[in-house]
Image (cartoon, rainbow over all chains, first blue to last red; front, side, top):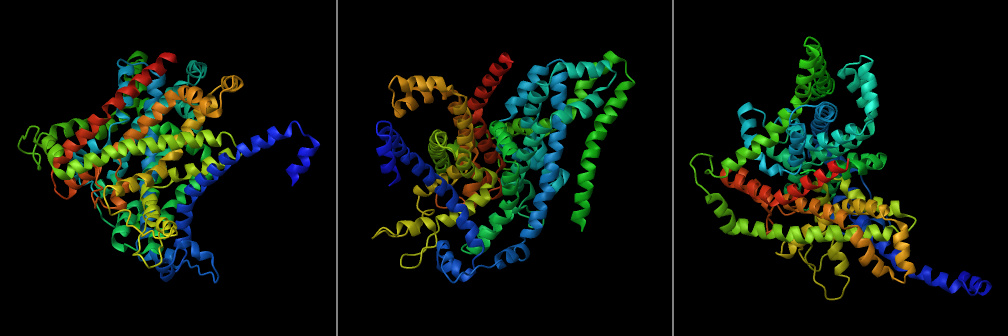
Amino acid sequence: MRVMVLSKAAAPALPRLVVRALGRVPVHVTIAAVCCLWLVPTVALLVSSFRPPNLVATSGWWTAFRLPLAFTVENYAAVLTTYNMAPSFVNSLLITVPATVIPLLIAAYAAYAFAWMSFPGRDWLFLAVVGLLVVPLQTTFIPVLTLFVQLGLTGTFLGLWLAHTGYGLPLAIYLLRNFIGSLPRDIFESALIDGAGHWTVFFRIVLPTSVAALASLAIFQFLWVWNDLLVALIYLGGQPDVAPVTVTISNLVNSLGQGWQLLTAAAFISMALPLAVFFSLQRYFARGLLAGALKG
Amino acid sequence: MGRLVLAAAVVAGVPVLLVGYITLVEGALVALPTRRAAAVRPWLWTAPGFFFLCVFLVYPTLKTIQLSLFGPDSSGFVGLANYLAIFTQSATQVALRNNGLWLVLFTFLTVALGLLIAVLTDRVRYESFAQSIVFLPMAISFTAASVIWKFMFDYRPAGTAQTGTLNALLTLIPGFQPRAWLVNAPLNTVFLILASTWVWTGFCMVILSAALKGLSAEVLDAARIDGANEWQVFWRVIFPLLGGTVAVVTTVMIVFSLKTFDVVYVMTSGNFSTQIIAFSQYQQMFINRDFGKASAIGVVLLVAILPVLAFNLQRFRQQEAER
């Protein structure tokens, strides 16, 4: 109606406007369809995790909104206590926090040296770091596992921290060196002339000015380790007492089969932290992830 | 309780240890003459990094190449027998074939969809909102994504209520029989690829969208004024200009498709002929206890990724030259 009234008022210009607006309809429809396709699977998971078992087994998740509504939090209570998800969540945290802090600090030391100290072979060594970025982890598992067995590190958090440190370093060194190397030369020279040592320059100037880069990298490494299944499977084995959430869920998928109300609740518990990070730190997250594109 | 103590000790201890290391290094270097200190300092600052790189990446890679020429328990030289076995045994042949399908289909779908969504959302005001939705799965684990999609593809026998979304939608079509999507090869591999595509499209989209923003509006407008329609603008102007970024994104997807493991492990456990190389390696390591073949698979993956490595190094050198 509105369009017809308007078109009488401004006859010559409007047909083109209307055509353009109509021409954009397919764009909006396609984007809406894409958004649906990307949201529906997650919504299905979330809704099912709050439905009682008998309903999940006999009706689709979309029927949950028909009256009478029947939602429950019992599935969460069950997976957290009976199915080991609460201890696994703690394990995941215990694995992830050190596996994020250690490589970041070690990489920052190396990056600082690569960027602002000169030593023979520096450029070639850095090229080697870039090369190591894409080495598939699969190429390293067997010798590292053999080493861990000899040292008694299999099934321990320490082993996993060390491994994730090694695997996370190439990317961290690469990115931090590029960032720290792009800081203006003046601040280093004036600080060193003022008699500040490298310790002071690094902790008082370099680290504080690199917070954004460090944050992006920390988020990337945190999510990478939190979401990791394979490295944990290899070095921790299937032991339930040290298993992170990913390993516990993959075990539940095998043992529960069709217990979808439990599987969906467990999956959502594992997603809660990454989603919180995603929504609160989205900008850093995207930046870290783009930078992580090269990781092997 | 023990865990909390451990957590507290680690949270406090790790930074103290690492900061303590550099403090010690700098403290010791004061004792040296300035020039000696300047020569030694870089090596001490990089030492922890090089130590980890050598122990977890350099040494294992070389050792794996060596082990791939030996038998299951790493004793007894067998030459290239492990490699021969990988390329001739039917189980690993299936894995190689599936990986080929992953490489082509997964890479194509993620890059094409990522580009399409980036170009479409570029034209609307709610761009960042729509992109957030597509990007969201990147935050969650493949394990969780596998549960999500296993549930989407769930199958119940015909005549009972379908709880899987895909079967429920398709059975709305009269005469359509529900299918067990994850059971019948080779289509089941395609469904695993679709689940992974759902996760990774957002990644391609964000990178391509950033590159798209970098294109000059004048060039695009000039093409439009010259009478090019949107289809021509895309294929003749936008796509060629994005070529470099598309190449980068494509290599990242290729690397990922070669090493993919989680989705197959969680959704099908490698059953129904869905296994892929990384999964075969896991089997060789922990089920067959054959470290020779498992190593050989690792080397095959490394060799497959070498061209990407060369591409990265070349790109890095270009960047350095421009600095």
